[in-house]
Length: 195
Image 1 (cartoon, rainbow, N blue to C red):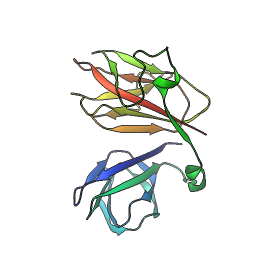
Image 2 (cartoon, rainbow, N blue to C red):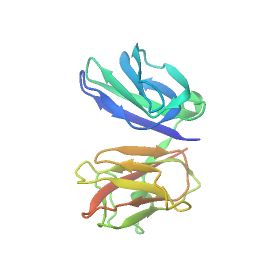
Image 3 (cartoon, rainbow, N blue to C red):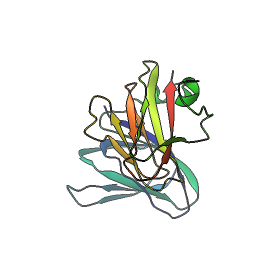
Image 4 (spheres, helix red, strand yellow):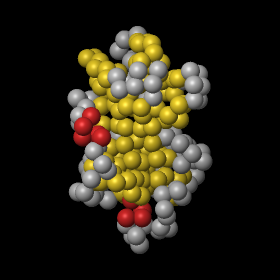
């Protein structure tokens, strides 16, 4: 099951585009948001202003979502391709920097506030850990180009593209690889949820 959860700081009246597709959208946080579903299969669907806690099921699926608020607000969304168990999402979790957890095996060690660097044309492995519920990879906002995330089992295909400042969450404990196929070094942060 694909599962994406992210919190966005929305500026008043500014659309936030989320290029993650699925069949389920849940607005966990953020009241009175304008929501628009994006799809290559059919016309865009503007559903208007919705309350916090609303859940959408789109049978044909969607390729992305746009959200905005009339006021400055934090909005948390979940996008999935299967039914979302909100009770499981609300359970207590611990979020830790993967670099801190691997103390000594990742250089330099950091507290999660400093990005790890990947040389031009290089990659960085995020090792498997069976205790992880999910992993979040965030591209540094100062990057000059995209990073890509792939799995060790399927290195020929990218699972996600991360433009500067973007992040993606994988509901998996499998090993992931962050790839920089650009011509300059790029930074990233990796976090794991356990619990």
